[in-house]
Image (cartoon, rainbow, N blue to C red; front, top):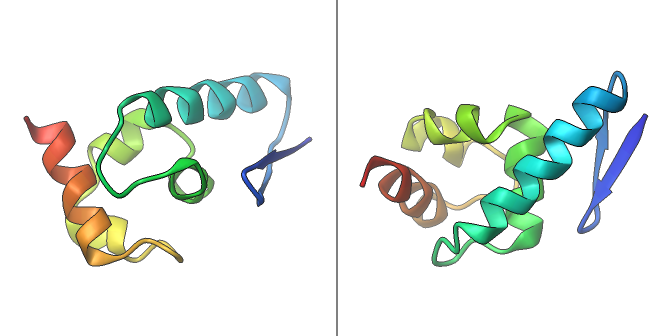
Length: 82
């Protein structure tokens, strides 16, 4: 199954994973992290597959995601550490 979030294409193994990623995307967008838009949220979830995985990643890990800057990675990391 394929999920297209804000122009980012995510291949899923089934409906459960599809729902989890879609819900995680909505939750990540609702977090309203400065400098992180819907496309950035989709990029992070394409790599990490869940909000929990994004929240527990280091700045260095987050910054390795294509399209995510070091400043965005720091903002995400700081958001989930506060």
